[in-house]
Structures are given as structure tokens and as C-alpha cells.
Length: 260
Ligand code: SAM
Image (cartoon, rainbow, N blue to C red; front, side, top):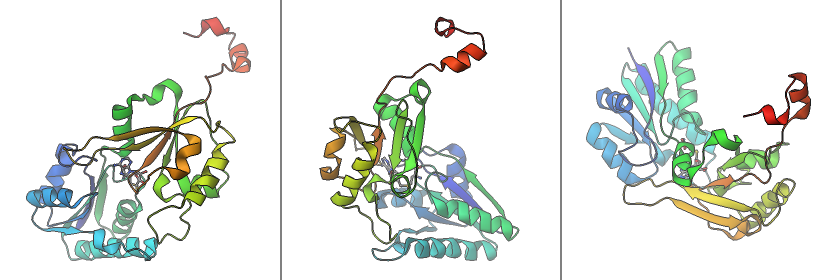
């Protein structure tokens, strides 16, 4: 009987994949891959020669939901034929990636075994590369365009991660870049919580062993002119210190000095 396993390959080619994910890839009848680099596809091909790329389903000017639908269907067709299908997705297959989850949902609805293996996401890499521990100040994450278009809010005493900053404002779901004027509106919105001089970080994890991560610190006001791509994630450090909630402390019979 067919099955669908979505595995995560990590960000950096070859080294960040889990043992179990590698095992699923090696044992699959067919592997469909969505990788950040063709070299990563070649590496996967060495684990399983029956490798097919999902990249050709994307296209500039093509509606992204259409691309996703086609990717899901091509994998499901093989599952329906009784094959063990593995979808290999870079980073964590369940983080800002709808194709793995939608395929799992569809496979399960049709009565097939389907599951996801977790992996090392861009966020996991940035904790290591930039040296942020989310436990120190707290952390929140948003899709940059969603943050812009909807009434979201920021806790500026904690870190904020803005995913897909490189396509912020791209409302047609057909293009793969942003425009400086859209980034300006984004900066304008962030002014509600941060001064324009606030230091932010453009982060790009290394995806090849020979690469170094990009960790570019710049002022918020300079973001519209900064170079960004589909690999960029924006990290916004806190703008103020944590404040004790005296009301809560009083309810608990505690004083500020009681907090270790
Ligand atoms: N599943 C991926 C993960 O686990 O990190 C995320 C995929 S999501 C469709 C694409 C977004 O992830 C980008 O816009 C960016 O915010 C982030 N991203 C992808 N590659 C990255 C990299 N090399 N470094 C930092 N962030 C990256």
C-alpha cells in the first residue's frame, strides 16, 4: 500500500539531516525534493537515484497555489499507485511550508499512512549562528506580508522573526521579490514599536558546507535599500527591557526581589 512521508533535510547540505529522515529517503520507491540548491538535489540523488525535483512546478508569474496543487497531485498519484513516496523538504518540512502538510492531510483522508519527520529549520540555525536563546527574552515569529496586511501586533520586549521578508508585500502570489516601496510601508508599520535607528539583522543560513551565514546588522530605516532574497529572514532584537507585572506579583504575595 502506498504511503507519504514528508522528511526535513535541514538547511545545510548533507550535514543537518536526521538519521531517520535519511533512512526514509533511502527506502522510498520515489523521492520528490524541494531543495534550496541543485547541489542538494544531487546529494539526495546519491541516497536514492529515483529523485524528482519539485522546483519546476514553480514559475515566475504562475499562481503559487497552482504550483502547490500540482506538487501535491504528482506525489499523490504515486501514492495511489501503491508506492512509498518520500517528500524531502529543506529546513523543517512543517515550518512555513504548506505542501508537505497538505499532502499528508490528503493522503490520510484517502486512507494512506502519512507522517512528517521534523528537522533543522532556518530558525534553529539562527539561534546557533546569531547566538540567540529564545528563552532569555521570548520570541515571536510572523510571515512578513501577513504581518503587514493583517492587524498583527508585536511585543517589543521579545525578539521578533519576520519570515519571507524578501517577498514582503507580494500580494499576487506570483512573484518572488519585494519592492523598496513595499518595504518602506513595512518599516513605517514597525515604527509603532521601534525607533528608525533600531538595529535589525538580515539573516541567511549557509545552505552549502563551503558557505558562511549572512548576518548583516543594519538600522531599521535602511531596510528598504538592503539586499534581500527568498533566503532572507529578518530578526528584530528587543527594543526595551522586560517589565515585571506587579499586579500578578501582588496576587501571588511576591515582591520584585523575590523573583530569582
Ligand atoms: N521550511 C523552511 C525552514 O524550515 O526554515 C522555511 C521555508 S519558507 C517557504 C521560506 C522562508 O524561510 C524564507 O523566506 C526565509 O524567511 C526562510 N529561509 C529560507 N532559507 C533560508 C536561509 N538560508 N536562511 C535564513 N532563512 C531562510
